[in-house]
Length: 325
Image 1 (cartoon, one colour):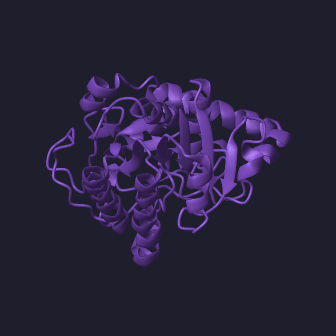
Image 2: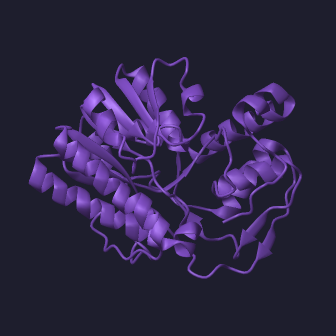
C-alpha cells in the first residue's frame, strides 16, 4: 500500500512513518519543515518539503497516486489558536478541506485523521465515550471538530473511507523541542536539569496519557480497519500530575519538590477517554504503561546529556526547559 503522510516529520509523524516502513508499506511524506529530507534520507521514503495548503499538492497527488492518506499536519497549539484563530482555521480546517478535495479527485481509498480529545471540552462523565457531546473550549478544538465534519461529509459524497482518531494526551521522546511539548516532557527536562517543577493548580487533576508509539500503531491499524469510524486513542486510565512526579522521582533517583502556581482559567480537572471502541474495531491496545513510557523518556534524556553528539543530531536544547501546562 502506498501511504501519503502529511506532517510526517512531526512528533507523531516520525513514529508513524517508521511503523509503516516496518509493516512493508510504501511511504510518501509531505511536511513543510526545512530539514524534512534529512530526517528520512536512509529510510527509502519519498519526501516533499511542502505545505499542505500549497498548489503543489496537486502535482504530488497526481505523481504519487497514494492509496491512503494519514493526515497529521496541523497547527497543534491551543494557546496559539486562541491568539490567532484565523491562522488556526487556515491550517487545520482549510488545509484539511484542500486535502479532502485531492483525495476525492485522485481516488484515495481512505484517510486517517488525527483529531483530539479537545473536541469534547469539559467532560460530563468519565471515561469519555465517542458519543459524548462535543463542546470544544478552544479554537483548536473547534478546528478539529469542524474538520471531522468535513471528512464525514466528503465520505458521503465521494465514496471516501475514513477513520477519525481522537488522541488523548500524547507523550514520548521528541527529537526537537517547541516549548509547548506537553507537561511530561517539561517534567522530565526540568528534573534532569535540576530545575523546579511548576504545577498549575493542586496537581490532583488527572490526564489520560498515551505513549507516542502506541499512537503510531493505532494510525497504521486504522488504515486497514475501522471503516467510517470515530475512535478514541488513549490509555483508558487517568493519572494525576502528582502521581507522574512520583514516578519520575523513582526513575531519576532525585527528590523533587513541585512549585504550585494558581490554576489556569479553562483547565479541565479530569480527562479520561474510553478506548474500548478502538480495542474492539482496530484490534489495538496500548503496549506502554505510563511507567514504561516515562522510563524510555528518562533513558533518552540521560543518554543525550552524556553524549553531546546525540544531542546535536537530535536537535535537543536544554537551555530553556518549557513550563508546565
